[in-house]
Amino acid sequence: MSDRHTHHPGDEQTHRHGREPHGHAHTSPGLRHRLAHLLTPHSHESADKLDPALESSARGMRVLWVSLAVLGATALAQAIVVVVSGSVALLGDTVHNAADALTAVPLGIAFVLGRRAATRRFTYGYGRAEDLAALAIVLTIAASAAFAAWAAVGRLLDPRPVEHVPAVAVAALVGFLGNEGVARYQIRVGREIGSAALVADGMHARTDGFTSLAVLLGAGGAALGWRLADPVVGLAITAAIALVLRDAAREVFRRVMDAVDPALVDRAERVVRAVPGVREVGELRLRWIGHRLRAELAVVVDGEATVRQAHAIAVEAEHALLHAVPRLTAALVHADPAPVPGATDPHLVLAHHLTA
Image (tube, rainbow, N blue to C red):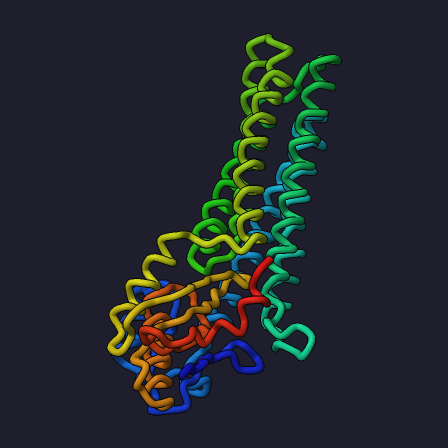
């Protein structure tokens, strides 16, 4: 006997059991979540609470708006100093920060698309748009590294004096503080909601902070009379950007290849094994779709269990997973009967379909 049980409604933005109300928002619990859990009904019904995936997307959009405002203001302040000082290095940093502010565009589009309901063509929804946005951001980081290298080499071959050093130093410091503040905010929220794209954008902002520091250190060296300070430091920062690019590219590559933290798989297996009626856990798979997780697994149950009993065990297994695995929004549970000695494997008919 086997049973398949899943919860993936058409809009893929709610989780319902169709029974007595019960549930929580399956995101990383904070103080507000715990208080809400104590003061609100135990329900998964969309009419009773805001869907966690929608809430995550809303948080992502807030981050993008804040980032756009902070980096835009930073670039504007630096542009004023560029006009006054004529600093080419600061001009490059200003253009870079302005470009970074615009990376909010692909991320914003991704978050908006992620809210769209699943369709007959896109049956898993549009969460993968975040991965495409992350790829665009990684390419932007690569372009940033190339631009920093080009500017540093050009300045090394044609050294120029830096004028109005104090103003340039202040503008560079403003650029660093603006980028680092945005980076911390984006990386923290991106990890909380499970958005690789937002984390990648945060890493990108951090690289731009390094670029601003290069301008600051170069200006300091120029003030001491070392004309090559700016290009030498610029080359060092290019190397730092390349390291951040490697980390961001690796994270995005893993997400595109459906990689998950093995600790999540271990946790899911432990939780399902503890469900009454589950004798063993078979194949278990987790995958990211945007900043949401989905699971597929097989559980072994008593071969004498009725269809209703096996279904109830599958429901309980999914319920346990939704509470134990952060950002999990749906699970497909397949119940297999415990094998009987001498009996034919019921999956034997599928063997020739599963071989390479």
